[in-house]
Image (cartoon, rainbow, N blue to C red; front, side, top):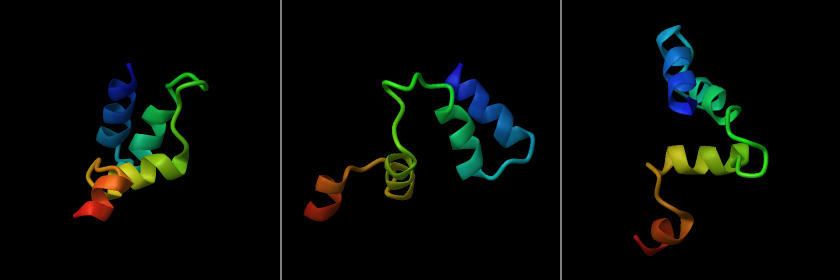
Length: 55
């Protein structure tokens, strides 16, 4: 359902970052990543900070 929400938002013309935010809102609050965590994961291609520093 989360991926579907993000894809529909993107197909309707939302920028990728906004489409990801639409999907993020579908995650229950206890598991939802913060906006900063999502931004870090999307700008580094999903690599964590530890891997980024080691590279």
